[in-house]
Image (cartoon, rainbow, N blue to C red; front, side, top):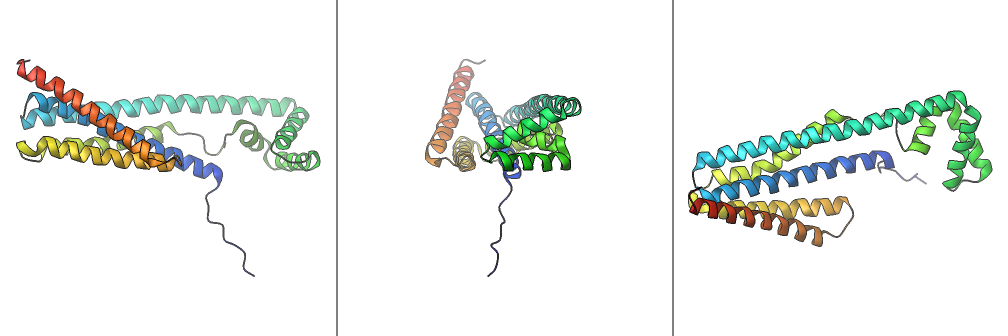
Length: 236
């Protein structure tokens, strides 16, 4: 009798990967919507290709840098908090090892182990690596895989850039008469894709997510185009 294979990712690794994928999808979505709104708004005021390209590139660079900076600051704060929590746990283990062992036992009991089994598991985990045991069970932190702000910043930068390139290329490459319909159609299709992807990553029904995404993108483009057209007609 052969043993069943187990190819599933561990919970921590799976959760980490899903978080990165979700961040990438949302970053690309932001790039699509913000850049599409910008270039469509400018297209409402002018059909000058160089103006559209300049506006689109400016929006792409500003948005991607803003996303990267925001992610770096946010994840750096999270990493600092994780380090502070680990430092406090390290000090408590040094000063009150027995109390910490009791605490780990109680935490394992709360997860469904009997008192005897929880105590034995706590002792073995403490003997192997007390800090890692408390970090994972008590704090939900893996000391060997703390969040990396540079990874988050680059991921956000690239995701936003990839998303922003779609409406930028769609507005400058086609002939003048085709620019707006090509841009609107490609953006709505891309938003349907990111909405579906975000829903699947969250194990939710994709229908509503796709509808919200497409409706939001269409509204953003409609509003910015109307404003651009009004400003262009007024000669602003």
